[in-house]
Amino acid sequence: MDTTYDVRVYKILTYKGKRRTTYTVRWEVEGKRYREPFVTFALADAFRSELISSTRRGEAFSIATGRPVSHRSKAASMSWYDFAIQHMDARWPRLAGNSRKNVAKTLMTTTVALLRTQPTQFRPIDVRTALREWAFNANRRADAPPDVVAILKWVERNSLTMASWEDPEKVEAVLTAIDTKLNGAPTAAWSQKRSRRILNVAMKYAMQRNILRTNPLPKGRGTAPKTSTAVDKRCLLNPSQAAALLGWVRRRPRGGPRLHAFFATLYYAGPRPEEAVAMRVRDVTLPDADAEEQWGELLLHTAQPEVGKQWTDTGEVHEERHLKGRAQGDTRIVPCHPALTRVLREHIEAEKLKPGDRLFQAENGGILAGSVIRRAWGGARKASLSADDYESPTGKRVYDLRHTCLTTWLNSGIPPAQVAEWAGNSVAILLAIYARCVSGQLKDYQARVEGVQDLSALYPEA
Image (cartoon, rainbow, N blue to C red; front, top):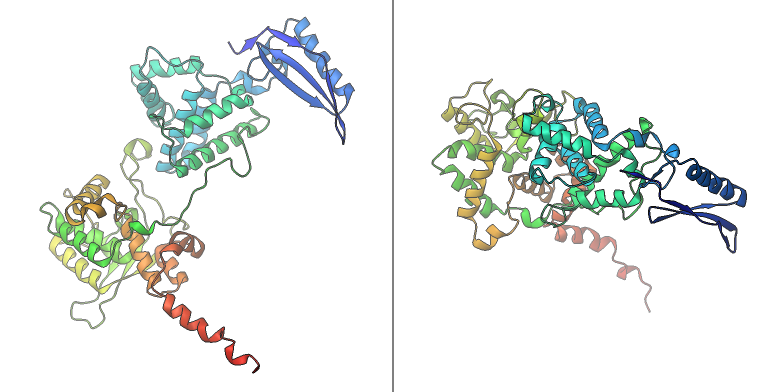
């Protein structure tokens, strides 16, 4: 039960400060003390009288808020579990696959934290799976198997009401839960920030529906962890390391040349992996082999991130999206380095690809799976890098090939505006991510300002 009749109301406490006098009503609900300050005695006395009247009428008090149930908002009549499902269903059509997955994960953790009691007849991992994969998945909820339905019915019966958000201790418990892994270690700062952002959207939805009066989540500086978007310089590959890695992939017995072309495209042209897997042969413009100019062009217009078939409306593992940060139907053109021109020309000829075919295909002709890409890259790192480099962040993610490409462009003196256009970023985002990686131009910068700032020739003679 979240209500009680164990209530005591005390005398009004008067505090005379330097600037004004404050009158505080004090009362106790099932051993927990509450205080409400007022600027006038009349207001305090009226509030205290209302509390006393409620106890005389035999009215129950909310344990979460300390107020009579007649004071409770609409939050007391709706469980968090029911609200979370309504909120997810309202957002579902507008969310991308990965966003659906992240929202479901945050709602799952919050729901577990807002249970009246922890399950004894179900394993905790099964409860979390049922919530994440079924309850908060609008496409799968109706098809949940019987064992999952039993778990969700138990959760529905044991979920606290939305009035729990009016209890600061409960709010703190939820934030602690989303900031902590199952093993007790803290989650990454960016994960904490994303979870808080998801909960804030949920709280705003509750306010729009008049379920909560205010957003109960803490606000202001210091309430969310600090995160950095800057790239760690240690993840970048030098030319020798890149050559060794790409060379190993090319010699890989199974699909090596095909994957080599994919990784080379990331290294030389810098598309995001989900943009590269979506490319078609017709999106590549290559000069003839005997042409003097060997620079080509790549046309990027679609991204196909891998999100899992349970989170897409099509039931496919990959979801087709427009380019990140761009309007629907927008495109961008990226130069194709002469070295990449040779690689792609050989790749297209060896695979006998037609204009409408995928540029990078799986063995069955479909889209390249992320597991295949990551496995090949992990094998290349282990076989090509030294033990120290392998344990370091150097090229640890496939995405680091893109970081290396964009950093190379900036360090070669290409204007940030042009690099941003090729990369599909704004200039501000580009500089925030890669400013720490720009190097090799210090001598040139020093030479530019050395003469301009030299005042020795202008000093009057002694």
